[in-house]
Length: 217
Image (cartoon, rainbow, N blue to C red; front, side, top):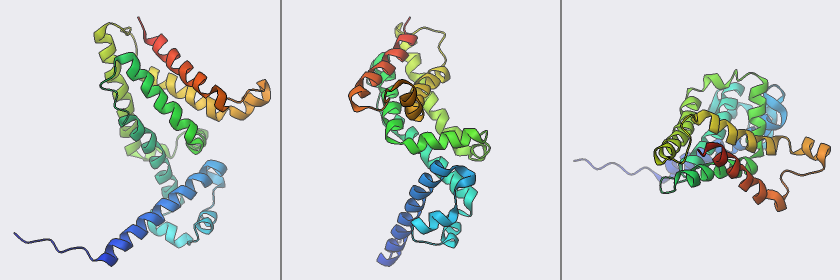
């Protein structure tokens, strides 16, 4: 058996530098696309903010559209990863659903750029998203996870039998999305900040109550 040759330290460092550069480009590009939309975002601005060049961005991603697709894919991968690590198998079905709802609640609050990106893509009728095949798999996994919890609840006799996992996913997402996306208009109309710290647990509990209340027999 031949031993593998150790990777030279300088090669490892180059790989680390490349990964750091790619991550920084994605971080800045996320802000740029979220704030300015796809049409308004400028690769030159992303390059300037990362102290690199447009040519370097094209080297890593191939172009503006490919960079935008990479931003979208990473944004959805982060929320799906949070759901998959929620570890709800040991919880009873109502508690498991509540926990998954809380994961979405916490994620959307902490990632307002994700909310903006979803809005950007909806404004374009999801014409870019359809080119990222992995997004279908990522989001299907979220619905599958929720579906397994619902099945356990039906088997235990605590959840109604006519519930669709995608409908429940929509219910959770819509509450969490609205709270962040409409914070400013809601505040202007009703003088209430939906992200006010002193009401956070109220809304978090409210979401869990809404979903579990809908599901119960």
